[in-house]
Length: 341
Picture 1 (cartoon, one colour):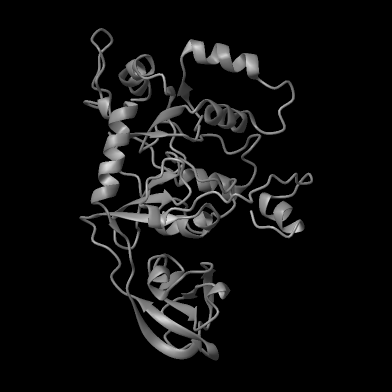
Picture 2 (cartoon, helix red, strand yellow; picture 1 turned 90 degrees about the horizontal axis):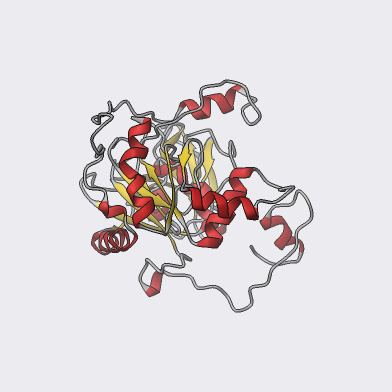
């Protein structure tokens, strides 16, 4: 139903000037977490890979198109969309996919495997060639005002997701580590992120130096290695699959938590740039893989201020732009000037 998607949503482009495109691609539409073939949502992250946009938008963009862009065309489109405060409509389950095994951006077997992990819709078209197309039912919820109301209502009803942990071995560290999950405030926070693939339900947590990070143990071997500064914990039940949860996050933590919420397959870190993709002003819909619960991950710095005041982070008045040298990341550029990104 690739063309049916565009026929069903074209009226949104005329009705809502904040929508600039409809795409058949979902940047986080992995088979392990995406399942509803009829669900559509809005994103501020331009997806590309099979999209429709109005003629007047293209006429505007082509006048601004750089003669020698220093990034891919899709990244330039993302900056253009953000500057204009526009969004795209995308499906939960993609209607397009990578078919070729070799191209300008697909050069390794691992990259091919990465794109094979995406879901692909198998929904037949219910539309004919003469009548108006309404494949996805009433999609007026995607209009800006209704969508914002729906999101804020869901956030109000959702519970903040918290894990449960139990001390297994005091004074021990993992015998073999699967993943470094980075600094976490508590063992409860760490318990939410473990329990998938090589990352077992057991994890090491430092007794005092929390900046050392939470370490997921490989396998189910209970006996660790003695270490006076670490203890091993077990993650207990972390969520109810019938409930909706909210998980506040910071951008710099996202790459470490994405796998736990079905937003990045295991072992596929850094296959593509570590952006927060398919987000709506910093809000991403994920599925907690160990419990099956739907989770709204919300950026603490979101300009929409989705979170309660005590959970938000506001921009520092001391914030300054830093010019990085070619090839340096944002983090490296700031660190060179003894600052944090």
